[in-house]
Length: 204
Image (tube, rainbow, N blue to C red):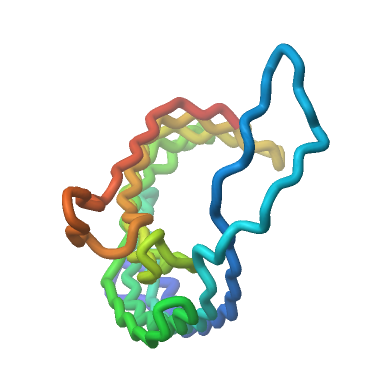
């Protein structure tokens, strides 16, 4: 939809999407014979290891989203929000168990840009993300979704009268995930979420 509220021009986008994933996994795990690095024997017999994981997983995700691009004179503001619901059904054939995991999250994005007459446009943006992960941890439980956030500041330049666009930006990405299933305790072992952070500068 395109509409105006006073001096503000809006471009509103709404939508819905659906994703479905069907996943099978059969993993065997065991010890291999010793290999002498000075006199390797590549013809040693290796016994078929026992089954470590055997699972079937179905995952569905539905998302509703809305985004508004607002223009006021030379200022551009973009606001977006999204709501996701995810369901993961896991059949663990080793443990002979069926588990259902439900996750949901609100995510959003915001960006602000100013257009100068000479084609230069500084901007800043912030966004969050939510993404279910297929598969199971060593314990056979489904992974928790990955969540992230991104902060970016930059400068765009489009020489007047051309189709060329040049950008330089500095960004920070943070991803939080737990690939051992949800945070649980197993005897003396605790599986905790991991955090990966990336910072950099991009020229385009």
